[in-house]
Length: 231
Image 1 (cartoon, rainbow, N blue to C red):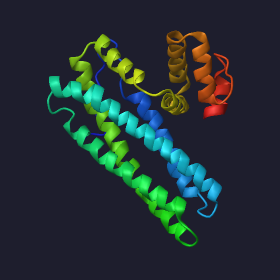
Image 2 (image 1 turned 120 degrees about the horizontal axis):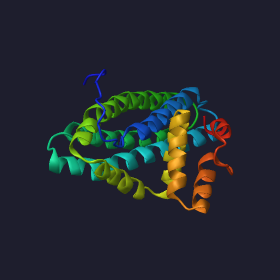
Image 3 (image 1 turned 90 degrees about the vertical axis):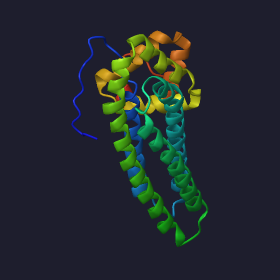
Image 4 (image 1 turned 30 degrees about the horizontal axis):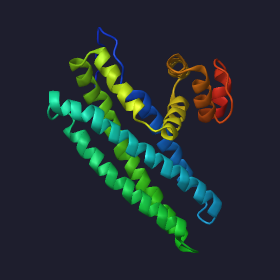
């Protein structure tokens, strides 16, 4: 893997299937690592809240890799055999890691007394190893798989992949993904994401989704307020 992989722009503008959602997942993972590192193992309410956030993040990860397997890897296996093999192996390891993290979290939640600091430390260290591996994995998808997708599929075909993925995400998970993506985005990226959502949804649906994402009613165009709520 070359960390300085050169990305050549296509003459036809095509969507990047990975970058925006990966930015969101990276931010969510980084925030989770900090939260675990700062967590007081004897504050049961704080532990419960943080482990709930970890469960949400694991759920996002499972949803993300499931949709990639079904909509991206399956397609590549047919037209470009072998291109997604390594990423697919990573996904299998991710599932195993999610199960391990869930077990460690459960052990911490139910532990009593002096065992709690050690169990939290184990969870923190295992999560740190996971995101180190996951960040490498996401870089590979962005710099090796995405260019192959752009070279072999039309803009319409790539948009279709993204639409099928988005359409299969449960509403409650879509709120989590959208919140993470908007939090991680630059302001121009954030404007583009929200403008695209507004164009594709009836006004009441858009208002409801954005209210769920930011946690209160939000007026289109109030970007400073959004940044204050999310970032």
